[in-house]
Length: 285
Image (cartoon, rainbow, N blue to C red):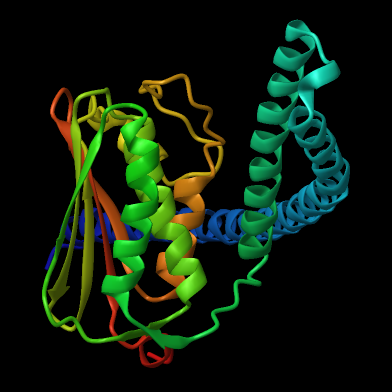
C-alpha cells in the first residue's frame, strides 16, 4: 500500500484520538463541577434544616410565653363582662372586642404550638380503640348550633354497623373539628353541609362537602401549607389563622392516612380524609 495513502488515515485517527481525549477531559471537568455542586447543595440543605429547626424552636418558645398573658387578658375580659352593671355601653363593646380578639389569639397560639411540635418530629399518637360514628355524630351535633347562626344546615350520612377503629382519638377529633368549622366558616347562609362516613377498602373515609365558593385550582396546593391563604374569604367575617389544614394534614399523615380536596369554583368543595382501621399496624409499615 502506498505510504502516502496511509498518512491521511493515520492523521485522521490521531485527530479522533485527540478529540476523544478532549471530550474525556471535558466530561471529567463537568463531573468534578457536578460533585462540587452536589456537595454545596448538601451543605446548604443541612444549613436550611438547621435554620428551620431553630425557627420552629423560637416559634414554640414565643408562642408558649405569649399563651399565659393572653389567657389572663381573656379571663379578665370574660369576668368583667359577666358583671356589666357598672359599665357603659361603649366599655362593654370594647371588652367584647378584647374578649373576641384574645380568644382568637389563644387559638392561634395553640395552633402554632401544635405545628411547632409536629414540625420538630415530636408528634406522638396515643393509640386507642374508639367508635368513629359516635365521634362524628357528637361533633356534628355541636356544630349544628354554630351553623344555625348562619342559617346553614348540616346533613349527616354514616354507614351503619361501623366497627371501632384504632387511632389517636383527640387528634382525629381535631381534624374533624377543623374540617366542619371551615365548612361553616366559608359557606354562605341558606346552604347545607354534608358529612359522610364510610368504610373504604381496608380503611375509613370521611368526606365534608359544602356549597361555598370553591377553591381555584391554582390555589389548592397552598391549602395545606402553614399560614397559607387563598382568595376565598369567610362569609361571616370570621378570622382564620391559616394553620388548621396544615395541622390536619400532619395528623392524618402521622396515622398513615391521606387528606385532599376536590373543588369546583362556584359549586363548593369536598375535603376527604382516609384513615386505616388500625393506625398502630399502619405506622409499623
